[in-house]
Image (tube, rainbow, N blue to C red):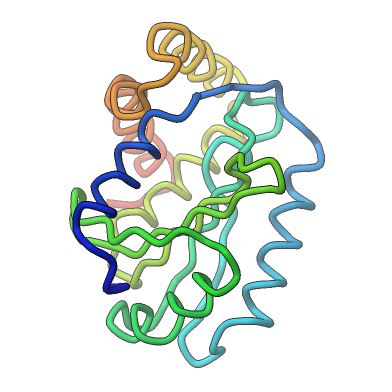
Length: 192
């Protein structure tokens, strides 16, 4: 951990979950933004810890409405070494670090902000066995079936209008759809 007082961490969490959802139409520049960030991470972080980097989340699906935040899924060889070696590097670059223990298995998560203080990237650092890797099946399925992506986009739009500054309610609201489509995608791709 960073050694910051727990109150500070709780305040940071509360601030982060109350930020505006702010969905936008698909931006064809998002894949390039992913590539730039992935290249930066590969150059800046210890290569012995980084296994692969994937673009996932809604910005990785052409045509899908999304928060304009590039989600990167980074496979690391060790979460413990990530906390020791990678987190200090990213914090020195201005990223906000959170240890996500509300999911299983837990993972390291960083937020990068632009010059205006708005989120631009989410870095999810996980080991190979993390359930988050299933999100790549979800991503690929939405890419292959744009009509499913549009239906999912409608769910997101409804939730963003209902919970514009409550990221927890927004995420909970769409989680059943994400989980259901992920299972359909895994079956479609022959994954059991």
